Structure formats: C-alpha cells, structure tokens
Length: 349
Image 1 (cartoon, rainbow, N blue to C red):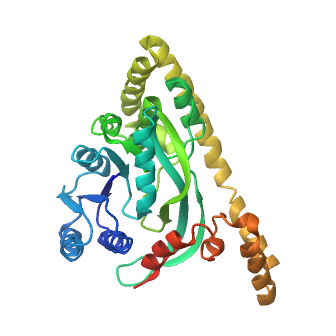
Image 2: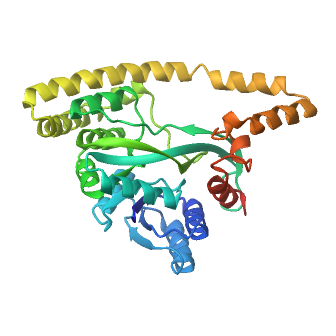
Image 3: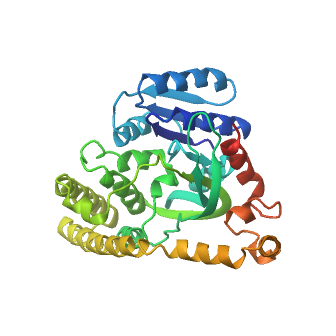
C-alpha cells in the first residue's frame, strides 16, 4: 500500500535533489510531500528539480517561508491523502518496497499503530552542492519493537529505550493526533518526543526484517541541546506542562483510568527518562567507539593485514546481515542491493 512521505526542509535543496534522484532510480510509487521553508534560492532550486522529476515520481510541493520544521510537519501531515504516513528528514532514504510491507502489516494488524524494519546510519563528509559526498562509515540505527499489551506499559517501554518513532510508518489518523500540539510546544524538542509517546499509547510497534531506512550524519544536521541545557531553557516548563497533560489525557482514554492516575504514571515515567538522558549524555562523552576504532586501525595497520581482516569479516556467514560499511558493500550481504542504490546516489556527482 502507498505511504505518504513527509519531508520538511529548509535551505538544503542539494539534499532534496538527491531525494528525487534516489526515488526516481528505485521507481518509487509513494508520494513525496515537500514542506519547504527555504529562502528564495533554495525554493527555486527545488521547484526546478520538481519539473525535471515530476514525470517519474509523485511529488507534492508546499511553500511555508520561514516556518519552523515542526509547524511544517503538522501542516503536511494534515494534507497527506494516504492512509499511512512516514516522516523523513531531507537527508533520509526509505526503501519503497519495505514501506509497502510496513503499511500492509498495519492494514492487517489493527492493534499496531506503527511498523518499520532495519535501519542504517551513515557518516558523510564533503557536504556541498558542488562536490559528491564521501561515505566514511555505517552502522545500525535503532528502531525497536514495542508490543506491550497496555498503553502505559508501551509508554514506559518507549521512554525507557528511547528511539525516534516518527521514522516508523504510522496510521495517518493517529499521526494527526500525535502532531496536534506541535504549534503549542514552544520547546521544539518536545515535538519529537510527543510524537513517539502518543504513537506508543495508541498502539503497538513492529520491526520487520528487510532494509528500510538509510539516515545520514553530516555537518549540516541539526544538533539537539544537552539534557541540562534543555531543561534550563525558559521554554522547557511551559512545553512540559502541555506535554504531560496531552499524554495523560491520551493514557486516560486508552487504558480507561482516572486522569490523576494517568498524570502520576506520566510523571514517573518521564522522571526516569530524564535521569537516563543525563546518564546517556555523560556516557557518550567518553568516545568509547572512537577508542575502539583507533585500536582496530592500529591492529590492521599493514595493507595485507587490513585486506585479510576485511576479507574474513565479509566472508563470515554469521555476518551476512551485519550493518557496517564494508559488509553492506559486499555482494553477499542481504541488504547489499538496496543499500548500494542509496550509496551510489549519495556518492555520485
């Protein structure tokens, strides 16, 4: 089944052109809904690209000058015609056939509100409109199952192992509920969190086995504040009050409990989420992965040793689903064909 792909963008026309090139190359039947808040140069570049690709892929373009990404997101969600929807950054690439599998799964399983599959995150450099991109590394990107039977347990499971549910295929009617408060939340970080929380309250989440999504890390990406900077912001508490009341009302309705009990549950779960956010932030500062990478580089410093290392890595049958750049680019990898299309689009001039 067709999925509406919602893509807010601002001043990244080079990435939008890559989107058009990719979805044309894979002959996608899903509609791209572009919500553009760019300046005149980038908006004109996008509109010219649409003229080139509109005979090959379905594109709907809407211009919202200087509007914030969450507000654009909400507007586009309320425009989407399909029964199923997914959010995409202007630097994210979905596998069309896997989107269809996810929407088909949701059609046949009413107790699920979202579905996704295996995701990859890649690090790129040389980001500019004139140069091709260099893919430096790749790794797994977490999109998780959430199959608890009650709404409050799904909410707890979601915030205990936080991941971005907006990258899951969702029911459009449920997504409209999830984004309803976007224009009230002056702290934009809450718009990301509330989307996943409401989705988790409304139904289960399923992870399928196919390659589904490739995300990019690059110098142009938006960086979220540290947990301390976040809660010290003057916009934090007014947004938290709206967030808490919205979740409490949704929890009350879904689990048929009194509102005060729902508020207590939301407060308890969110307190733990905040504490874990501080722990994760501190752990990330140790750069453990960087230390491991440097160790491996020293270990395989010689050219022969390096070739032997990657040969063994790629030929090991246990690694046929491994999500690393070297294995993804090996023809024996089960994700090779789908990943290679994204890789070629990104790295070609």
